[in-house]
Amino acid sequence: MLKDKNIVLGVSGGIAVYKSVDLVSRLKKQGANVDVIMTEAATKFVTPLTFQTLSLNPVYIDMFGEPKNYDVEHISLAERADLFVIAPATANIIGKIATGIADNLLTTTVMATKSKVIFAPAMNTNMYLNPIVQKNISYLKELGYEFIDPGTGMLACQTYGPGRMAEPVDILQYILDSFYNKDLRDKKIIVTAGPTIEPIDPVRYITNHSSGKMGYRIAEESAKRGAETILISGPTHMEPPNNVKLIKVNTTKEMFNVVEKYFSDCDVLIKAAAPSDYRPKNVSETKIKKKATKKDELNIEFIRNPDIAAHFGKIKGDKIIVGFAAETNNLLKYAEKKLKDKNFDFIVANDVSKTGAGFKSDTNIVTIIENEGKFKEYPIMDKSQVAKIILDKIVSLLDAKAR
Ligand code: PMT
Image 1 (cartoon, rainbow, N blue to C red):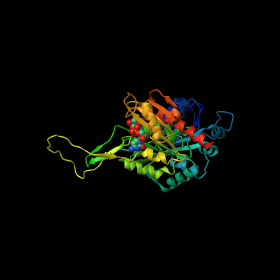
Image 2 (image 1 turned 135 degrees about the vertical axis):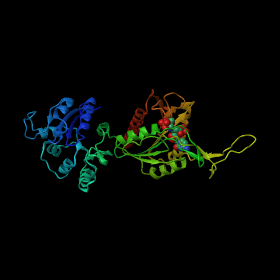
Image 3 (image 1 turned 45 degrees about the vertical axis):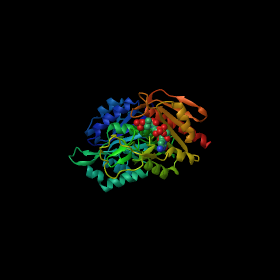
Image 4 (image 1 turned 90 degrees about the vertical axis):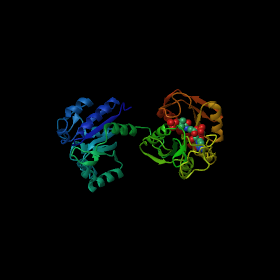
């Protein structure tokens, strides 16, 4: 994933340096070339040899030391960087960079680079919350520097609170996301995900088996590709993806109302949710009690919920709407009908009775159907891969519209 990428890792002095050792190892496994610059203070925690051994490169520390190459090191490192990461970033290093101080190799190289710079702060909670540090962070953010927020927990100084450097796995993910093709930048995408639930009484409801996985993977991919992403989700156990505005709903009517709120402003609506088509006509205010009837039956009357996709399909104008069809038989026939009836640009049909497809699983088996009966069947693949295919298609449609 990071082949041919040059990452310059600035390491300043804090106990979290040990995590940066792990980060270097992870970056190398992704194929990156890693150049490490350490501050003098950082070398007190971990020896340069550790970073040198893992990065397979010399480690840079001293502005005026014996040169490792015959070029001006801070300039060549600055120019070589496809991405500059400072982890751990101490209050001191953040403060120096925010005020333009360039008094060691790390700060000088940051000053000279044109690449994106990402800070992973690590420090004592009181230091992190200190208004001076917070002001420096805000100022650097304003200038376009990026920050990976520290976690909250028990710190080495035995205080509890924010300040613990983000985990190497999360920093790596942030780095990988930074190199993502931002082909949906400036676009606004709404994704609906998960089931809806329709109450019968205060303790019971009807719903379906949707876990939200398909919709959440789409929202994740959309955000990674730079789209402003609004994820409207029924109840799920899913972790919200990064950089996504998550709005939680329960019922189909609630989902409809939230889509309505954001629709006029969006470019794309992706309807991966499985909203309940019906809801109980009357919701009992109290728990329905068992009755000793002769038939032992309980009849609940249902009425139709709004069809969100069909409603917005009618008024979509030049927006793109992508639908899903969850079927157990006659996949193509039913999906094609939904494509036309709901005015989708294309529909992602999945036979939810197949193993590895549809509800709950991490994989899906889909057929994408476009207008004029054009369709393509895909083999079983991860839902994140399906998400990529869907968003690739959306990018092509947006490009075609822009022409
Ligand atoms: O969430 P997972 O566990 O990962 O499962 C994924 C999934 C099976 C839910 C997903 O792949 C999927 O197929 N979603 C659509 C489920 C569905 O409701 O399909 P449908 O054929 O009943 O509806 C057709 C389309 O109309 C869908 O885009 C649906 O979101 C939309 N619809 C349906 C009913 C309704 N009242 N309003 C709608 O907008």
